[in-house]
Image (cartoon, rainbow, N blue to C red):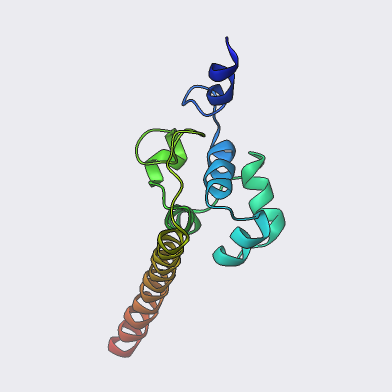
Length: 134
């Protein structure tokens, strides 16, 4: 393999793991692992365990992770679908555009958290209503 192939080989579907994809997407956004942990509401050691393929997030955190990193769930899990671009293939964004994209990602993550909370509240309400009927 020549050097240009080596630069992108780690990123291929055949070579990259779930942890590799999380780290690549995080780094592509210029986020530290601490930043990602804070945005997801998890501990730093949790993010590091994901990136080191020591553990994987639960479904709700996986959805949030996808939103914060602006990649598809499918890409995170399999490497197929909407993910991050191969290093060196993207055009640099103006700071205003990058800022807007970051704001959109954060809103998507917040919406995901809100949807999760709505589901929990709905289940609690249904349980309470069943108790009232019984």
